[in-house]
Image 1 (cartoon, rainbow, N blue to C red):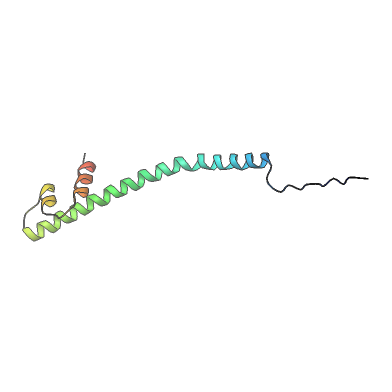
Image 2 (cartoon, one colour):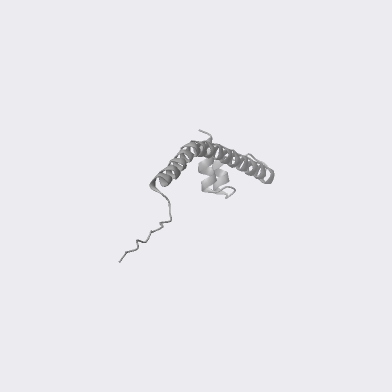
Length: 94
C-alpha cells in the first residue's frame, strides 16, 4: 500500500518579504518626520501673525467706538478679545 503525501500549499508572505516592507516603511517615516516639524513651525508662525492681526483690529474697533486708544488689558477687560488671544498676543510680542 502506498501512502500518498499531501502537498500543503501555504499562502502568505515570507519573512524576507515582510522585512523588505518594514524597511521601506521605516525609510518613508524617516523622510517625512523632519518635514512635519518644519510645517508645524510655519503653522505656529502664521497662527501668531493672525492673533496679532485680530488684536490690532479689535484695537481699531475700540478706538472708533470710544475715541481713545486702548491698552491690551482694556481690550481683555471689556471682552474685545479672549484670555487666550491676550496670552498669545503677549507671547508673540516678547
